[in-house]
Length: 191
Image (tube, rainbow, N blue to C red; front, side, top):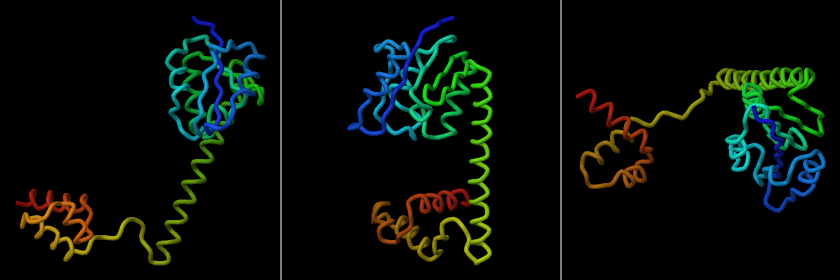
C-alpha cells in the first residue's frame, strides 16, 4: 500500500496564477514535484494534469487541494471523483473546507454532498418537466418541427436524379442530411 502525498491546483484561465495554491500545498507538506496543476475550467471533467494524477494514484495515497472548488465546479463531477477515490482507498483533503475523506466527518460530508447533488438533479428534472407541461398547456410541443412532406419528396427526387450532391440538396430544400438519409433508408427498407 502506497502512502504518497500529492497536491492538485487549478485555475480557470491561462493568465491566472497558481502560486498561492502551490505555496499553500507546500506548507501542507507536499513536495513541488508532486503537485499537479491545470489551467482549465473546473467545469470540465477531463483535465490533463488531473487525468495524469488519476493514473498514478495508488491505495493509501493522499491528494490535497486548497479548496473543493479547485477539484471541480460541478457537484456531480466532484462526487464522481471523490466516490472513485474512496473506493480506491485514496484519501482526499481540502484545506479551506477542512474536508478530510479519511475522517468520519469527511465521510459524513461526502454523504451530504451526494444528497445535495441528487437534490440538485431532481430540482432540474422537475423544472424541465414543469416547463414542458406549461408549454403543452399553451399548445406547444417540444422537439424539432416535422419536415414538410412535399419538401422531403422534392429532396428525394433530387437525390434520385443524381444531378446534385447531398450538400447541394440540403441547401436547395432546407432538409437536413440526417432527415434525408433517414427517409432514403426507410424507403429502401420498404422496397
